[in-house]
Image (cartoon, rainbow, N blue to C red):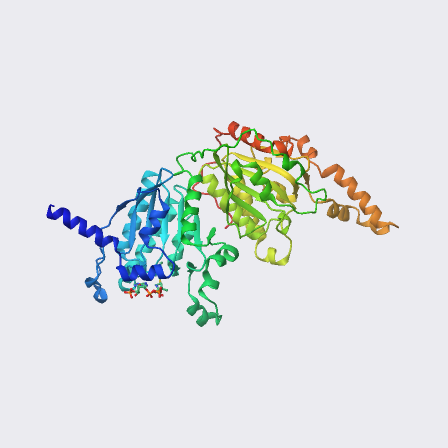
Length: 514
Ligand code: HXC
C-alpha cells in the first residue's frame, strides 16, 4: 500500500487510543465510557464524521513538548440523531484528564461555529479536569471563547451539555449557559469550588456528591435538568430530548410519527377531578392520557415540583407542556417553580415549540421565606415569559385558577390564543373559604352559629364565582369543554394555530427581572 496511506491509517489508529490503553482501562474501571464510545451511543449507527483528529497542543511548558497526543483531549465532529445532523464535542479524560488547552478550546469553538452556521444542535459531552494547568492563562482564554459562543448561540441552536465526569471551577459556566444539562448519579459533579476549598473557607464537611452531584443539582440548585442512573441511559435520554427539538430557530420542530388517533376520547378524564376541591390529584395522569401514546419527557423533574414542565407530541407535533401539579404543594407557584417554568417557556418560544398549559393553581406560596427570597421578582419571571412568548399558546383550566396566578398561567389577557376550561374550573380571586372570611368577618363574629353561617356563605360564593362561566361570559375563556374531549380539541386547535404569526415591539432585548 502507498506509504502515505499507511501513515494515515497509523495516525487514525493512534488517535483512537487517546491517552493509551492503560488510561482507557482506568476509565472503564470507574464505570465510565471513553469519549468515542459515548459518541457511538449518542448518534445513529456509523453516522459520526470526525474532524480535527490530527490537532495537537502547541505547549512547551513543563515538558509537554514530549507528550503530544493526537486530538488533544477532545473528539469533535458531526453525526445524526434520527437522521438529523447534530454537532458534537466529547472530552477525552484519558488525555491529560480531558483538560482544556488552547488547541482543545479551538476545536470546540470550531465545531460550535459550524453548528451555528448549518443550524444544528450542539451537544457537549463534558469530562474534564478543567483548565490545562500547564498552559495557564491561554486555557482561561479558551474557556472565555467558548462562553461567548454559548451566549451568541443561545436561542439560535439548541445547546445540550452532558456532564459525565468532573466539571469544576469556571468550566461550569459553559454548561450553565446552555439550554439543558444532563448528569449521571455518582459519576458526574459540578461545582465552582470543590470540597477542600469549601472546608477551608466555610469549615463545612461535604462530599463531592453532596456538594455538586447529580441529585444535588436536580433537586436543590436546579442547575441540572435530567438525572440518569448510568451513561447509557443518559445518552439515550439525550436522543429522546433531541427528537422533539428543531435543529435551529430557523425551522419548525420535526414531526414524530404516531399511531394514536387524533379523535381519541379520554373518558377517564371525566372522573379524575375529586368532588372535594381541596383534594389533590396527579396532573401527570391527565397529561399522559391526552398526549400521543402517553409519552411525556419531563424536564426538571425533581426541581420546583409544584409545576410540571416537559415535552410531548399531539398528532406527532412537538409541544412544550407547563402544568400546575396539585399533588405537590397543592400546585402553588413558588420561587423554584416560577424560575423553572419561565426558563422552559422561553426555550419553547425561542425554538418555535407551541405551549400547552394545564392549570390548577391556588396562587403564589405565602411566607417570609418566599417573600424575602424574592417571590415577587421570581414570580414575575414566569409572568414575563408567558407575556413575551409568541408561539401558539393554549390553556386548559382543569380546576383552580385563583388570583394573580390566574393571570400568570397564560391567561387570555397575556395573549393566550385559546383558553378552555373544564366544567370543574373555579376561576376566582380566591377560594370560597378565604373570600368569606374577608368579606363577612363581622357578620360571622356576631353570628350565633358562625360555622353554619360560614358554610352557607361559602356555598353562595362558590355558586357565583367558583365556576368557569363568569369568565366565559366575558370571553376570558373561549369554551367550556368536557374533559374527555380535550385531546381532540387540543389537536384541532393546534392545527388552527399552525401558521400563527405574532410579534413584539422592536427592542435590543427586554429586561426580564433576573
Ligand atoms: C492538566 C490534568 C488536569 C489539569 C487532571 N490532569 N487535571 N492535567 N491539567 N487541569 C491529569 C492528571 O495529571 C492525570 O495525568 C490525569 O489527568 C488524570 O487525573 P487524576 O488526578 O489521576 O484523575 P482522578 O483521580 O480521577 O482526579 C480527577 C480530578 C483531578 C478530580 C479532575 O485530576 C484534579 O483535581 N485535577 C485538577 C483540577 C483543577 O484544579 N483544575 C483547574 C481548575 S480551575 P496522568 O498523566 O497521571 O494520567 C479551572 C479554571 C477554569 O478549570 C476557568 C474558566 C474561566
